[in-house]
Amino acid sequence: MRGLILDGRLAVGVRLPAERHLAEELGVSRTTVTAAYDRLREQGYLESRQGSGSRTALPDPGSLGADNPWLAPDDGDGLLPLHAAAPPATALLGEAIEEAGADYHRYALGMGYHPAGLAPLREAIARRYGERGLPTRPEQILVTSGAQHGIHLLMSAFAGPGDAVLVESPTYPHALDAVRLRGARMVPVGVQEDGWHLDLVSGAMRQSGARLAYVIPDFQNPTGHLMSGEGRAELVAAARRHGVTLVADESWAELALEEPARAAPLAAFDTDGRVITVGSASKLWWGGLRVGWIRASAATVRRLAGLRAAVDLAGGVFDQLVVAHLFGRIEETRAERRRTLGASCAALAAVLREERPGWAFTVPRGGGSLWVRLDGPVARSVAEAAAARGVRLAPGPWFGVDGTLERYLRLSFTQPPAVLEEAVRRIARDPASYRPCEPLTPTL
Image (cartoon, rainbow, N blue to C red; front, side, top):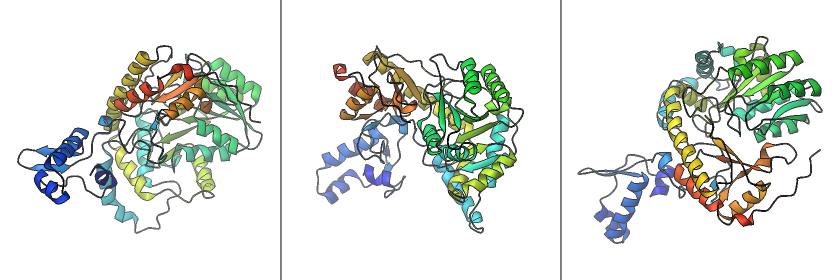
């Protein structure tokens, strides 16, 4: 029955047969049916009222445990997915889908291609930047099929074979993939345990001759650091001094775990159009909505819209309509995420301190993961052992260049507390099996 509800074959709100009638129909004891109904009620798949029977429901994602069948449907390996910093859908998604469905027919009268993005969505994104202190016009927004699509477009436009691209270390692994695909040369600059050292960043810009830099100033992935306003001003000034274009990934910018815990967008410190911003609906609302965006000058947006035609002509209309409606309730979603991610972060920190007191970390003020320093260079060994115990982890070398960061793990807290607690208890077993890893051979 749970599978029928999750697959959509049994709609939410449907009244189920009485226990006695279902037992007779299935040829099982009433005790069996009663136990099954009780289990479904405990998990949130049934709602029962005296005198009106039981109706199907969908549970709050935060209440699900390690037996949630949809934790990692794409992998199909049954491992608890602590490697993926991706929360389940917001509770507001269903209403936004209904609202988008009511509007959808109007767009069916046209061709369906909107190369720069659907007008209501571009307006909503621009309005949100204005609310955050960065006046923006809709023509400065290009809607993409997710943040990764946006990063790929920008690397295609601004980096070529052999060009130096400055990147943070550690950083988002798929951004490194985009740099590699262009054949560009990565110039890593370390993000320290206390955050960015802007003198090192400026020095790397000067010495490398890089003309492009990829940075994550808002709840940096994977460290969770939040760059201060003073740091942002200093970073943009250094970029201006050395002729560097900054690509600022703001995928996590709206995911503060406490208020206030935010700074003005990096582009608010820009005076000559050298900061290009990438945003995403995936972390705030849901990864299944393949909607991201780029904020840049209107001229750059036109150039990128032409470039994307070699990849895809435009994004899906329906997903864009859904996100446009969700923007109207963004503060509700942010409050929901503060509650759910805050609870999960606290649970993960507590169970780590209990089970692995030798592992060090700083609880971030936002984002979706802990950057954990291990008690030795054993990250890949821990990940291998964890996989054998049913947990998929993200070892530090995923986030660095040429096999560095072997003393670190990124543990996401986007899963419910019960899942995180179970996962950590599994990986804490038999720590003697963790062995130091041989350095990876650098990739030329």
